[in-house]
Image 1: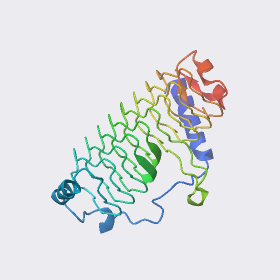
Image 2: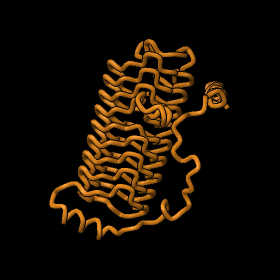
Image 3: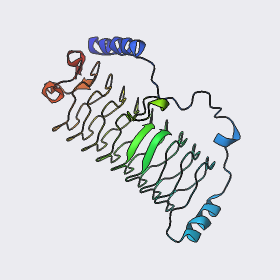
Image 4: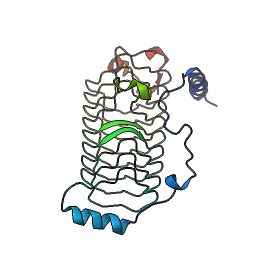
Length: 261
Protein backbone atom coordinates (compact mmCIF):
# COMPACT_ATOMS: atom_id res chain seq x y z
CA UNK A 1 0.00 0.00 0.00
CA UNK A 2 1.43 3.45 -0.91
CA UNK A 3 2.78 5.49 2.01
CA UNK A 4 0.16 8.28 1.69
CA UNK A 5 -2.70 5.81 1.55
CA UNK A 6 -1.36 4.01 4.62
CA UNK A 7 -1.10 7.28 6.55
CA UNK A 8 -4.64 8.25 5.55
CA UNK A 9 -6.05 4.87 6.65
CA UNK A 10 -4.29 4.96 10.02
CA UNK A 11 -5.27 8.57 10.67
CA UNK A 12 -8.88 7.85 9.74
CA UNK A 13 -9.10 4.86 12.06
CA UNK A 14 -7.60 6.86 14.92
CA UNK A 15 -10.03 9.71 14.29
CA UNK A 16 -13.03 7.36 14.41
CA UNK A 17 -11.88 5.76 17.63
CA UNK A 18 -11.43 9.13 19.33
CA UNK A 19 -14.64 10.75 18.05
CA UNK A 20 -17.21 11.36 20.79
CA UNK A 21 -20.73 10.00 20.59
CA UNK A 22 -23.12 12.34 18.81
CA UNK A 23 -26.28 13.58 20.51
CA UNK A 24 -28.44 13.51 17.36
CA UNK A 25 -29.84 10.00 16.92
CA UNK A 26 -33.58 9.84 16.24
CA UNK A 27 -33.48 6.12 15.46
CA UNK A 28 -32.49 4.99 18.93
CA UNK A 29 -35.17 2.64 20.20
CA UNK A 30 -37.25 2.91 17.00
CA UNK A 31 -38.48 -0.33 15.39
CA UNK A 32 -38.03 0.39 11.69
CA UNK A 33 -39.40 -3.02 10.75
CA UNK A 34 -42.92 -2.24 11.97
CA UNK A 35 -45.80 -1.30 9.64
CA UNK A 36 -45.68 2.40 10.61
CA UNK A 37 -42.24 2.58 8.98
CA UNK A 38 -42.68 0.13 6.11
CA UNK A 39 -46.22 0.53 4.76
CA UNK A 40 -48.51 3.32 3.55
CA UNK A 41 -51.91 4.28 4.92
CA UNK A 42 -53.01 6.06 1.76
CA UNK A 43 -52.40 6.00 -1.98
CA UNK A 44 -50.97 8.39 -4.53
CA UNK A 45 -54.45 8.78 -6.01
CA UNK A 46 -55.90 9.85 -2.66
CA UNK A 47 -53.14 12.41 -2.20
CA UNK A 48 -53.71 13.74 -5.72
CA UNK A 49 -57.40 14.10 -4.87
CA UNK A 50 -56.55 16.00 -1.68
CA UNK A 51 -54.29 18.35 -3.66
CA UNK A 52 -57.06 19.01 -6.17
CA UNK A 53 -59.63 19.62 -3.41
CA UNK A 54 -57.29 22.07 -1.68
CA UNK A 55 -57.35 24.34 -4.76
CA UNK A 56 -53.83 25.62 -4.39
CA UNK A 57 -53.72 25.64 -0.60
CA UNK A 58 -51.12 23.50 1.24
CA UNK A 59 -52.36 20.08 2.26
CA UNK A 60 -51.86 18.44 5.66
CA UNK A 61 -50.10 15.06 5.72
CA UNK A 62 -48.63 15.40 9.20
CA UNK A 63 -47.89 12.09 10.90
CA UNK A 64 -48.96 10.02 7.91
CA UNK A 65 -47.31 6.75 6.92
CA UNK A 66 -46.36 7.26 3.27
CA UNK A 67 -43.58 4.69 3.09
CA UNK A 68 -42.72 3.42 -0.37
CA UNK A 69 -45.26 5.61 -2.20
CA UNK A 70 -44.50 7.11 -5.60
CA UNK A 71 -45.13 10.82 -5.03
CA UNK A 72 -42.79 11.97 -7.77
CA UNK A 73 -43.70 15.22 -9.48
CA UNK A 74 -46.55 16.11 -7.11
CA UNK A 75 -47.22 19.72 -6.13
CA UNK A 76 -46.71 19.70 -2.36
CA UNK A 77 -45.66 23.32 -1.96
CA UNK A 78 -46.12 24.45 1.64
CA UNK A 79 -47.48 21.06 2.66
CA UNK A 80 -47.38 20.00 6.31
CA UNK A 81 -45.49 16.71 6.44
CA UNK A 82 -44.32 17.05 10.03
CA UNK A 83 -43.45 13.64 11.54
CA UNK A 84 -44.58 11.84 8.35
CA UNK A 85 -42.93 8.55 7.51
CA UNK A 86 -41.54 8.49 3.98
CA UNK A 87 -39.05 5.66 4.12
CA UNK A 88 -38.10 4.59 0.57
CA UNK A 89 -40.76 6.90 -0.88
CA UNK A 90 -40.16 8.43 -4.31
CA UNK A 91 -40.46 12.21 -4.45
CA UNK A 92 -38.19 12.90 -7.40
CA UNK A 93 -39.12 16.17 -9.08
CA UNK A 94 -41.73 16.92 -6.41
CA UNK A 95 -42.59 20.56 -5.65
CA UNK A 96 -41.88 20.96 -1.93
CA UNK A 97 -41.01 24.64 -1.74
CA UNK A 98 -41.72 25.92 1.78
CA UNK A 99 -42.92 22.51 2.94
CA UNK A 100 -42.66 21.49 6.61
CA UNK A 101 -40.65 18.28 6.79
CA UNK A 102 -39.67 18.50 10.45
CA UNK A 103 -39.00 15.19 12.24
CA UNK A 104 -39.81 13.08 9.20
CA UNK A 105 -38.40 9.62 8.62
CA UNK A 106 -37.26 9.46 5.01
CA UNK A 107 -34.61 6.76 5.12
CA UNK A 108 -33.60 5.79 1.59
CA UNK A 109 -36.19 8.15 0.08
CA UNK A 110 -35.63 9.66 -3.37
CA UNK A 111 -35.82 13.47 -3.54
CA UNK A 112 -33.67 13.79 -6.65
CA UNK A 113 -34.33 17.01 -8.59
CA UNK A 114 -37.03 17.97 -6.05
CA UNK A 115 -37.71 21.65 -5.26
CA UNK A 116 -37.12 22.04 -1.52
CA UNK A 117 -36.38 25.75 -1.48
CA UNK A 118 -37.03 27.32 1.93
CA UNK A 119 -38.32 24.00 3.28
CA UNK A 120 -37.97 23.16 6.98
CA UNK A 121 -36.16 19.93 7.82
CA UNK A 122 -35.68 20.14 11.58
CA UNK A 123 -34.62 16.93 13.31
CA UNK A 124 -35.38 14.92 10.18
CA UNK A 125 -34.02 11.41 9.66
CA UNK A 126 -32.87 11.09 6.03
CA UNK A 127 -30.04 8.61 6.10
CA UNK A 128 -29.12 7.23 2.69
CA UNK A 129 -31.67 9.50 1.00
CA UNK A 130 -31.07 10.60 -2.57
CA UNK A 131 -31.12 14.36 -3.25
CA UNK A 132 -29.04 14.52 -6.40
CA UNK A 133 -29.81 17.76 -8.24
CA UNK A 134 -32.35 18.81 -5.60
CA UNK A 135 -32.72 22.51 -4.77
CA UNK A 136 -32.55 23.17 -1.02
CA UNK A 137 -31.62 26.83 -1.31
CA UNK A 138 -32.66 28.78 1.79
CA UNK A 139 -33.81 25.63 3.58
CA UNK A 140 -33.38 25.08 7.33
CA UNK A 141 -31.73 21.69 7.67
CA UNK A 142 -30.86 19.98 10.94
CA UNK A 143 -31.36 16.60 9.30
CA UNK A 144 -29.33 13.43 9.57
CA UNK A 145 -28.13 12.91 6.01
CA UNK A 146 -25.54 10.27 6.81
CA UNK A 147 -24.53 8.43 3.63
CA UNK A 148 -27.02 10.47 1.61
CA UNK A 149 -26.34 11.44 -2.00
CA UNK A 150 -26.41 15.17 -2.81
CA UNK A 151 -24.45 15.27 -6.05
CA UNK A 152 -24.91 18.64 -7.78
CA UNK A 153 -27.51 19.63 -5.19
CA UNK A 154 -28.13 23.34 -4.55
CA UNK A 155 -27.92 24.52 -0.95
CA UNK A 156 -27.29 28.22 -1.55
CA UNK A 157 -28.01 30.16 1.61
CA UNK A 158 -29.22 27.04 3.39
CA UNK A 159 -28.85 26.90 7.17
CA UNK A 160 -27.44 23.60 8.45
CA UNK A 161 -25.87 25.09 11.58
CA UNK A 162 -26.33 23.67 15.06
CA UNK A 163 -29.54 24.77 16.79
CA UNK A 164 -28.53 25.95 20.26
CA UNK A 165 -32.11 26.69 21.39
CA UNK A 166 -33.41 23.11 21.59
CA UNK A 167 -30.83 21.37 23.74
CA UNK A 168 -33.52 19.13 25.28
CA UNK A 169 -33.40 17.24 21.97
CA UNK A 170 -29.61 17.09 21.95
CA UNK A 171 -27.37 18.98 19.57
CA UNK A 172 -29.45 19.31 16.43
CA UNK A 173 -27.43 20.16 13.33
CA UNK A 174 -26.90 19.13 9.75
CA UNK A 175 -25.14 15.76 9.57
CA UNK A 176 -23.61 14.85 6.22
CA UNK A 177 -21.33 12.15 7.54
CA UNK A 178 -20.02 9.99 4.66
CA UNK A 179 -22.43 11.81 2.33
CA UNK A 180 -21.72 12.04 -1.40
CA UNK A 181 -21.99 15.74 -2.26
CA UNK A 182 -19.58 16.05 -5.15
CA UNK A 183 -20.20 19.32 -7.00
CA UNK A 184 -22.87 20.54 -4.58
CA UNK A 185 -23.43 24.30 -4.30
CA UNK A 186 -23.13 25.61 -0.71
CA UNK A 187 -22.57 29.25 -1.64
CA UNK A 188 -23.45 31.46 1.32
CA UNK A 189 -24.64 28.48 3.38
CA UNK A 190 -24.30 28.30 7.16
CA UNK A 191 -22.54 25.04 8.03
CA UNK A 192 -21.32 26.06 11.49
CA UNK A 193 -20.76 23.02 13.74
CA UNK A 194 -22.11 20.63 11.13
CA UNK A 195 -20.78 17.07 10.86
CA UNK A 196 -19.09 16.57 7.48
CA UNK A 197 -16.81 13.72 8.52
CA UNK A 198 -15.68 11.56 5.58
CA UNK A 199 -18.07 13.32 3.19
CA UNK A 200 -17.15 13.59 -0.49
CA UNK A 201 -17.27 17.36 -1.02
CA UNK A 202 -14.89 17.41 -3.95
CA UNK A 203 -15.63 20.15 -6.43
CA UNK A 204 -18.29 21.68 -4.17
CA UNK A 205 -18.81 25.44 -4.04
CA UNK A 206 -18.29 26.95 -0.56
CA UNK A 207 -18.02 30.57 -1.64
CA UNK A 208 -18.79 32.79 1.40
CA UNK A 209 -19.98 29.75 3.36
CA UNK A 210 -19.46 29.48 7.12
CA UNK A 211 -17.87 26.24 8.31
CA UNK A 212 -17.00 27.59 11.75
CA UNK A 213 -16.34 24.68 14.13
CA UNK A 214 -17.46 22.18 11.52
CA UNK A 215 -16.25 18.58 11.77
CA UNK A 216 -14.41 17.96 8.51
CA UNK A 217 -12.24 15.02 9.56
CA UNK A 218 -11.57 12.65 6.67
CA UNK A 219 -13.68 14.72 4.26
CA UNK A 220 -12.59 15.24 0.65
CA UNK A 221 -12.40 18.96 -0.20
CA UNK A 222 -10.16 18.64 -3.24
CA UNK A 223 -11.20 20.91 -6.08
CA UNK A 224 -13.69 22.76 -3.89
CA UNK A 225 -14.25 26.49 -4.38
CA UNK A 226 -13.35 28.14 -1.08
CA UNK A 227 -13.48 31.88 -1.87
CA UNK A 228 -14.15 33.80 1.37
CA UNK A 229 -15.21 30.60 3.17
CA UNK A 230 -14.76 30.68 6.96
CA UNK A 231 -13.13 27.58 8.48
CA UNK A 232 -12.40 29.10 11.90
CA UNK A 233 -12.26 26.29 14.44
CA UNK A 234 -13.12 23.61 11.87
CA UNK A 235 -11.40 20.27 12.52
CA UNK A 236 -9.34 19.25 9.48
CA UNK A 237 -7.86 16.02 10.84
CA UNK A 238 -7.15 13.80 7.81
CA UNK A 239 -9.13 16.15 5.55
CA UNK A 240 -8.05 15.84 1.93
CA UNK A 241 -7.21 19.22 0.43
CA UNK A 242 -5.49 20.53 -2.68
CA UNK A 243 -1.71 20.99 -2.43
CA UNK A 244 -0.68 24.54 -1.59
CA UNK A 245 -4.21 25.61 -0.57
CA UNK A 246 -3.75 25.75 3.21
CA UNK A 247 -4.22 29.53 3.21
CA UNK A 248 -7.91 28.97 2.41
CA UNK A 249 -8.33 27.22 5.77
CA UNK A 250 -6.99 29.98 8.02
CA UNK A 251 -8.05 29.52 11.63
CA UNK A 252 -8.91 25.83 11.26
CA UNK A 253 -7.89 23.25 13.86
CA UNK A 254 -5.42 20.47 13.07
CA UNK A 255 -4.54 22.02 9.72
CA UNK A 256 -1.13 20.37 9.98
CA UNK A 257 -2.90 17.01 9.97
CA UNK A 258 -4.72 17.68 6.69
CA UNK A 259 -3.61 15.61 3.72
CA UNK A 260 -2.45 17.60 0.70
CA UNK A 261 -3.14 15.41 -2.34
